[in-house]
Image (cartoon, rainbow, N blue to C red):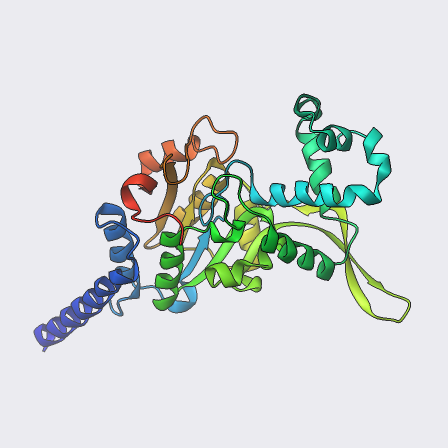
Length: 327
């Protein structure tokens, strides 16, 4: 009897595993090889009932960084491009900016003077573009920008510069009972405008940096939320595990990032019990996208790459592993 049960269990495992492998066709933009095989193998193991690594659907949490992991992040973060374009559009209503730094340097195109303002100057510009309006008005401004702005190199709308292999991976995971989340240093309200259409990830499954909002009533008694310039939470680096715990409430079993800002999220995922998958996207394709890692000021991949190598995490070589980059 035990032998019969064992044979049945083995048959069930291999049927489920074969089914999961057959679904590898759901990843057509991934070249066959180690990375693709490791993804399919992991999914087969955690979704096979009775298997040693089986994970119940409620615990199948997958988290993804956004900038540089799900869409392009060069030559500057796309949210920063939005903020700078918005400051330009707002300048006509603020003549005083012609004499105020960092606005003066930015609006006059004085790159040297703007560089002298440093990170603080950039943050001032971003905060100005993201505050002083209701959340509804902000969402409209993001949607309008995406409808008109285009990337300086690819001449395509920014929200078309999503990575086709990662879109396929998100869909593949969901088809196998995973719940997919964005966990990004980007602004949560910026991403929620377009993430569902781009990735199939609804607003409530987007974890990001947040600013303080204030509830208010207008003269007619209509309520709204006003965005202020005050930062509430930065969802980057060590903030990512905090954000995961605060918003998701479950430790992920699958995590993908692309930079040192994702290291703690990957460490947090790896520290859990049972089967785990940790992955990094390494930008190696200067012809189809960009090539950068350890020395980059945007999306720097240094310490996380070393840890991935030491601990056997999966590292996607964009040039080698992806047949296509953008849809």
